[in-house]
Image 1 (tube, rainbow, N blue to C red):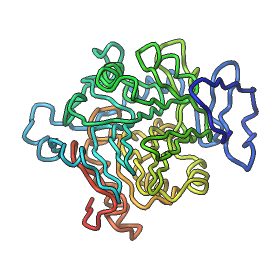
Image 2: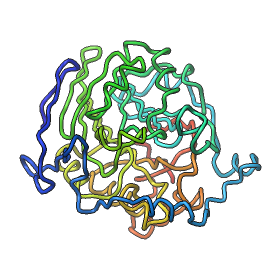
Image 3: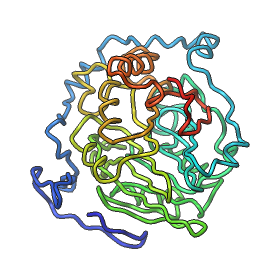
Length: 362
């Protein structure tokens, strides 16, 4: 744990007890019977009967699928400022929200893309699964540059085959892919040449133009599954990126757990964090795997994040809350806690935002 690893090194794991928090008290993934398990007492497995009950829940999302004018008003999609993306600021972090958990982040001369999904559906073959109700603000081919992609886990709404293929076609072997243990083979089979596979608390250094950037896989409370037979055979994670002057945290997909304080203590404060705020209802079902806006604010504070952006909402209908509720609740909770609206904000799809920015409003 915590060491550096090249793309050619292999990692082996001993089966461990869920109570083993490892050296210095950092939580470790549990690997038993060739599958990973959450070590957190806040996680609960869901049964098939639970899934069936969830499927019968009343859908309150109320997406105006046939009213483009209303969608354009409530959730605008804007064309990115490609001039800004081609010339990012040297003294700040710049970001652009693609949608869902996909964020383009530029810091200290490095461009990172998180959980890219440009596909119209998040499901097998691109023809099954939930359909987008807000389209990507641009094509992958329009993006000026990407140096590294971080993948939090292999669910279809976070690891999209079409997007991986198009990114490889555009950027080729100059692109570095960061994945959690168990996902590298899939990435290489789908054309990714430079793949770094890490477990929780492992670090890897990427060097570009004489500058060093540290990538670390960090814990999250979630799970993995891409086929009926591979549940939790791969690990899930969040990501830390630290440049010479700025830092970025990507939560990926997670329920609330004790890991965020550990991450904040070890790697914080962060210049910018991307934290999920959506896909959380009904709570009895979603709590172990998805945080809600109130928990997201707790995560923001525990990470010691200077600024955070809300992700994982406004793109696909995955759960039952109203499609605009995550943004509205986030604003309400910040007011209740007496926090400045600009410390944890949301953006339009395609909006290019500079952090810090004293004029940021939710």
